Length: 213
Image 1 (cartoon, helix red, strand yellow):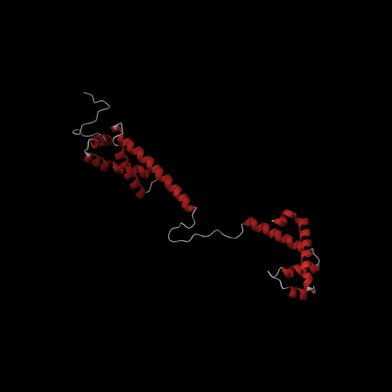
Image 2 (cartoon, one colour):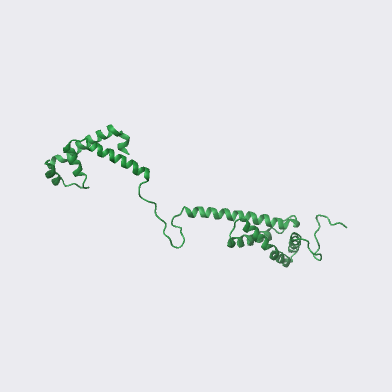
């Protein structure tokens, strides 16, 4: 008599494939004979492990993925409709779990690269540089060059006053007074007028937008 596609080899007959042995193990597990499934686990685990590894999962993670696949089989043992397909079910489940593991690993690596303090070996992440970028430095140099050019167009008395004032955060008006022969009381007002002239020259040559840069 020809065996139909729905029939399984009996336990007494030698199984012709790992898939057949998996089907027998699943049916026996459903009937409470768990030792048959244990033997199938030992047989199929190397295949599942290499399948997971082939998806790019590392060794340590592959062990966890395979273990979770077997846990999933036990949970779904009563709902798998086709025992003949149990090996295929395991392989598909293993691949999907491996893909998810690889995706999570990549996401984690991406996040770690965005956290400069999350480094191995106690290394200290370099802090972002406070130095200006090259384009900012170029613009600043150009502005300073233009500003000094405008300064040279001021009257001598203004040039000397502004140079002396720029030498310190809190200029000594008495020293400036003696250096250029200007009364202390008039230094502030003269400073304002000289700066206004400097601004006019600078804006005429460079434009108001450059002055505000």
